[in-house]
Length: 203
Image: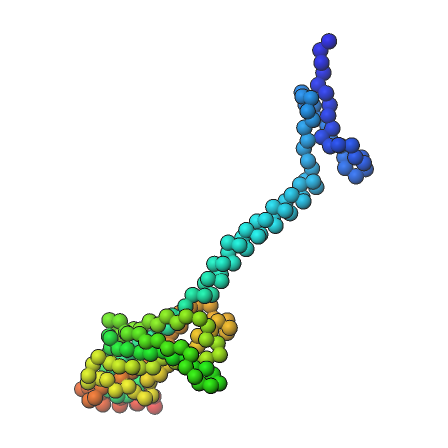
């Protein structure tokens, strides 16, 4: 006699009121099970948890390392050809000028950090500062100028304060400081007219 396909339950015996039973025709002595989405939900949750942990392990170190990157202080050093006390069209930037950064304790004023840098061909200096200096006062000062006729620091523009902490919500590692200047020994030609015109414009 020909054998007819057997009908198998894809679920083991259970309460029919809680889980409906679905049957399929299968030409085998082994039953074939197709789980319902409700049975897959725990597996999906477990996979989602594993995926979240994997992302946390891979992404969080990147964020932490980004916050540990050193601060980069960028600024310019100029020669005040008119001895005006500020930058004018007569000013020129000084390649090779040396600057120094210092961080002091806010209460005791004891020195906590110090480093020096030299300006490049455009008169721009870059200083890398490690760590966070939240409880310290940090500033960049002029050290020396390679131009003998413009080597006297302007006391009005010889220091620039910089804030080196991320506790204030700062995201970028690059901090720009105010330009600092040396005074030229003798004012350049045309400075008197220039300063007069600037004064007239302010009025």
